Length: 426
Ligand code: ADP
Ligand code: ASP
Ligand code: MG
Image (cartoon, rainbow, N blue to C red; front, side, top):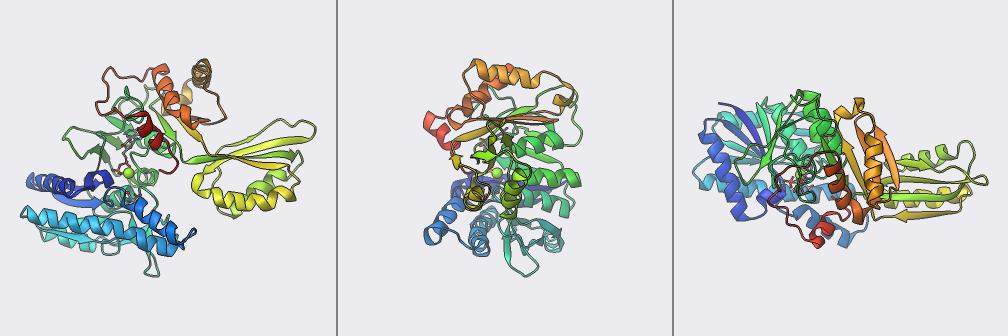
């Protein structure tokens, strides 16, 4: 008998039929003799739709109201799931973030969990209920509703698992685990039986949306084992944990892509001391998260500075630079929104020379132009044209020997679907 947290994402609870399927799976886990706590996301695209509604009434909605609005999505699915469980003859009780004891700081839209008060959930388990917790939300010190950032239900699940001392945190989605690349773009992607926290953190940070980065950070910090698996099959998925048998062997664990960033270039910047500091302090002061930074060699005392940042930070970056560009006597600003970051990730990369050379040669031979590069000891990222990202992922996957003989059976996306998947946003 174990204590298990089971988290179901938006696709898994997208319709009444799918909610009934989730209820069936939870009841089956209970019948095996386990204590079970469910965590749910909002149904299907509900969060996007609510964001659309907000944008239709205010182009810059107050974050407090936004959190209030978005938190309703998970409250619908939690109540429906509890009803679906009851319909199978089992007791269930739904809990909002507040009721589940998820206390956060007051940073609306990306609040951090500061405490998990487990009493009500423990009481419900002891009374024989299946508690159903609304993911993605918490409550701050003022009693205001907060949300944890896109994909934040994963973090709720890990936090609840830690808070109640669960044996495992199972995260169910529409893929049956963590693959060496997004299996929907890379048909020969390989399912990983296990992955270390460090590699998973780097994959998630580089855009592998299968697990939210903050959830992995939380899991690593408190040693919560995650099992990423399919909501639609019983197949074993991927275990995310500290020690992995393969850790020393593979140079590259996987390839991630991220289309959520844009590239900003300031042209004709005077090449003088203190200019970069001025630009980036102003951006930081306006909460713009810069990622890759490139400064060209100067010609005639002028240079270009480019950086990438999340598309969601672009309005603030533009606002800041509209002020700073004239101040530093730079010539102009240009924005490239159709870019994607493709990253090779692997703890084994630390001690393997030649990874960059091989990656650049692979892309160069296939006429994929590299617009920016950044590296860490366990990651190499390049920025390419968004339209070439899927091809870049596949080419690098093959070049680094990651291809599996099997083809991921659901990878039948049309060109339009791939384009939609690579569109800005998530
Ligand atoms: P949920 O809505 O259940 O939280 P997500 O959409 O957030 O699910 O995560 C599942 C998606 O993650 C898959 O549909 C897949 O396209 C994408 N994905 C990206 N990178 C990977 C990867 N390396 N392995 C598996 N899935 C990945
Ligand atoms: N519903 C939220 C989102 O779409 C949280 C989640 O699904 O994890 O981002
Ligand atoms: Mg998700």
